[in-house]
Length: 158
Image (cartoon, rainbow, N blue to C red; front, top):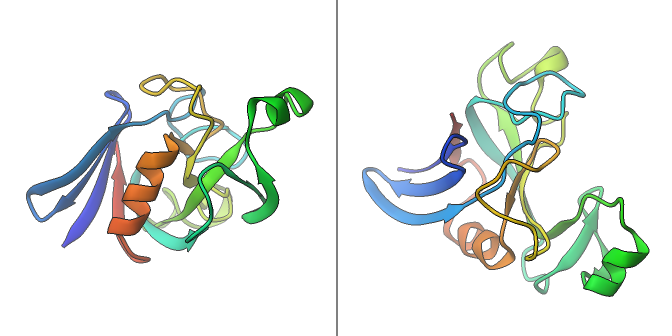
């Protein structure tokens, strides 16, 4: 069975099929650290699941707002026009919690917090916690992971 492990201490994501590692990459988790509370800007911990895959067949650097492609393709010029945007690019893997009252339900609900694995501008550093709660990945890496998994794939964030 395939599952994803995100090690926030190492800032690394790995995809396994049983005990065989299929994929590994550096990521960027939340600047505010780990936590589950709505509005915290933290990356949730524990067992979660891929609830939705968004952006299949979209070009690299497709810009998403509210999980919908805007029609824009990210460029440094676009970034200069919108310097405060939290760029969600290329693909989105929307996460839902599996642990009641830890990362699911009420004020700790990961799905309602809109926590994703997603692409980001390639010039942003990986291996350093800088996101607003999501797991950021290089665009090529999110495409590769997206193509290897399905909705229902479990993910453990530690």
